Structure formats: C-alpha cells, structure tokens
Length: 572
Image (cartoon, rainbow, N blue to C red; front, side):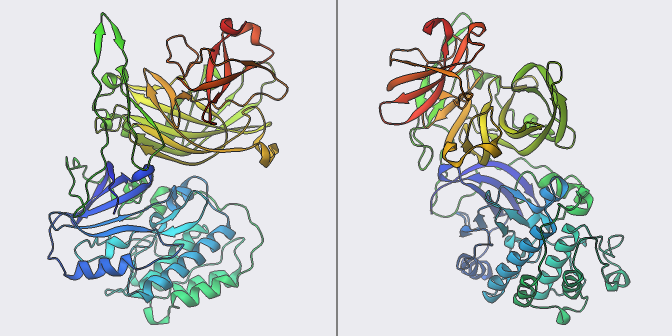
C-alpha cells in the first residue's frame, strides 16, 4: 500500500478518530483509526477482509483496512468532492437526480449485503459525490467490530432494536424522502413508535408510485421492507421528466450523528449533535503496519537576512506521485503563518468577505455561501457570487499545520458565469492573496498537495461566457498553486502565474524571444518564470497604453507552456 499524509483531524468519538489525509498525487482520503488495540486475526480482521474484497462503482473505494503498527483497527478509503448533506443545504438536486442517486446506492447495497456487510448509518452525510457527479456510499466503518459508533436516535435511524440488512433499506428511504423535500412523520420524536407507524405523505412534483416505494421501505416491520435489489429494480422503473431542484433544507434536518466524510459536512452534523469535543490530533497518528507516512515537507532551505530584506531560496522537491517536477517554495510567508491551523480552520467561509478579483476597489461579503454586488460604471450588471467548493486547506509553509485555504467561487451576471479560485492565509487575521486563478470554466477537483493546492481545471477565455466556448477551445489541465513571498503563483508543473493566459477575442498579440523577462505576478518584486523559455506571446488589450503589466503565454523548449506577466515598458 502507498503511503499517505495526514492533513487534518476531522472528528473523534468513543471508538475512533477520523482524519483527512492525502495520498500520492494529492488524492483525498479519509483515515479512521480506533483508539484501542485489538487481537490480530479477530472479528475486525475478518470484517476488514470482506470490506477490501467488495468493489462497486457506487461504493467509495477502500484503499486499505487492517491493523496499525500498534494493533489498532483502521480503515483508509476515498471520499467525494461533496456530500448529499452539503448539497441539500446549498444547491439541492432535482427529483430526477434524487431518484438516480437512490437507485445507485440501492444497487451498491445489494453488492455489500451479498458480501455480508451491513452499513448501519446511511444518511445524507454518508452519501458522497465524485467530481463528475457519481454518487457513492461511504461510512461502513461505523458498523465495524471495534469501530462501532452508535448513533443517537434520529431521522435516519431505525425503530428496531437489533438492526440487520433491512435497516439499511429504511435509512436509504428516509434519506431519499428528505432529499425530495418531505418531512418524516417522526421528526418531532424519533423514539415514538406511534409516529414511526404513520405513513409518509405525497409530495408536490413527486410521482405517487415513487412515494409508495419509499413508504414500503419505511415500514416499521423489517420483514415487510424490500431487499436492496427489489428497491433498486422498482426505482429503475420510475419515469420522471427533468424537474427543477428541490428546496434547500435546514442543517438540523440534514445533519446526522455520524463520522464526518469530509470537512464540509462536519458543521452540518454538529447542528444536530452539538459541537463535538475538539481534541488535538496525535502528533504522529498510528500508521498501517508496514506503511510510512508521506513526508509533508522537504529539507528546509537556509534563510539569510540583510536588514529587512529576505533572500528567498527555492528548494526543488519532487513529490512521489504528485505533480511532476512540482516546486515547493518556502520563504518569508512561512514566518507569517506559523501554527495557524486553528485560526484559519475556524473561519466561516460561507460568510467570508473578499476583494472582487477584477475590481480591487470593491468587496463582496457572502451570507450562507452567496452574495451580490454591482459592477463599477454606469449600467454595470448585478453580480451573484456563489461559493461552490471549499474551503480546502494546505500546509503553505510546510511545517505540519494548515495555514492557507482555497475556495472556488462563481460569479453570474446577465453576460454569463465565470469561475475563480481565491486563496487566503492567516497573518494577524485572515488575508486574501492579491492574485487569483481565473480563466476557468470548470473546477473539476481542488485538493491539497503538501504546501500547494492541486487544481483540475477546464480553462477557457475569462472574458467569454463558458457556455459559448467550443469544446476545441477548452483546455483541460492540472496545475498546482501556492503562496510564495506573499504572492499566489503557479507552482507546478512549472513555475508561472496563477492567472490563466487566455486573451480576449480580437486582442492584439506580439511574439517575443526567450530573453524576455517574465514574472509570476504583475510586480517587479515577483520571481521570474524561470529557464527553458522558447518564446513569449504578449497580449495587448485596447487599454495597453495605460497598464504597466501585460499577460503573456510562455512556450517552453520541452513543449509545455505556462503563463506570466511582462512589464509593458520592457516590450514597448
């Protein structure tokens, strides 16, 4: 098994602690490890063997399960980019998508049950979505020997005292009904048998046959519920025309007393459970037997000072399985962000205030993940800003804490939608990096990779409505960005500017030679893009005579390219 790096502690209960981790290449993982050792070859080992043998496209992949070096049980599995719980409180799915999700999870349960595995805690918080929208079920560890987490009675727990496979059907049906906008009859008191016996009601826009299927699956008598296969087959027959999204739900209805599948769902669950006791993560959490943790840092460079001037040294560190040739940079930014995990992780990014990427004179404050603004100038359109993904945290000064955060925002106007990635860091308060990642049509994934954020992007012209961009004009790329010297730069696969270099249609371009000085940000203090430049194409907008820096496309001798900034005076 490949090594992995612990990113942050997520939660802890009587049986286990849960950590977010990153494998080679920054792959997101969830590491659940028990508090107490168990006997090798016992019940947990048999359960882990069954879990490792199950494969299904709608089950989160298990990277490993077994015992740590000190014989504590662990499960290491993948996760998704978001959970159903997060979607239900922000951007609810349509009726059609709820049916597709429920059908997929029922199919996954059929496979799990056939392998002798019961889930035990199906709810919106344990249904995750991959970047491409594929629904998957996670959280089997909460029913594992020696890792059992007994959830308090709630909307998604079952009435029977000795739950078996039918309990998973009940919980899945409850999850689907809530996702469709329904109110379960026992919402006031999940322990009241009389309320449990009340049937669910019909819902606007939901076919009666669908409600009938869920009603049968919610029968208080376990023997009267369908199997996972029967429920899957029945749901597959439901024909629903494309429908609008369901209504956003309060976190108190969506959350559950379960382990967090990612950082974003933790506060939703805490709305139901109350704030969980925050324990410091173990300095060196126990690792799977025979597996060494991936290093979170490389050798730290020496730093010298002359007065108040810091001479920045760059250390090249190739991450195993990460971005090829990714540069890891440590400089004065490290001094400003020492041990800042606690502060930045407490920031409510759903209510963050940020500087508008294309208008430094304006700020927008989010409320509940959305905000509005009005552009500068007469007749400027109204903007609607939406937090899509994040925050994702990284170890910007690669000292073992989480001191930088990235969020993916979209802004929608009458002219279409644009996307941006903004990065924040902590230095006597929350600070926003002056540079942004723009020119994006889609952020397919955003994950930590040591001190960097690894972004899977669909890039296109930042001044064009993405819906109007031809497929041939889209660029699919994976880049790493990180803070360096107070600037946000591209750190991999090559050093460059965070801005994507796509010119406005009709803009004039000029070709320049390899000796052109190209910097990673529009300031003379920024580092140069580096060696290996073959040619530089500078973009000259109509306002070129009034700007000091011009965006440039840098072609490299190895056939790759990156972006940068050229001083207008250098190419006058």
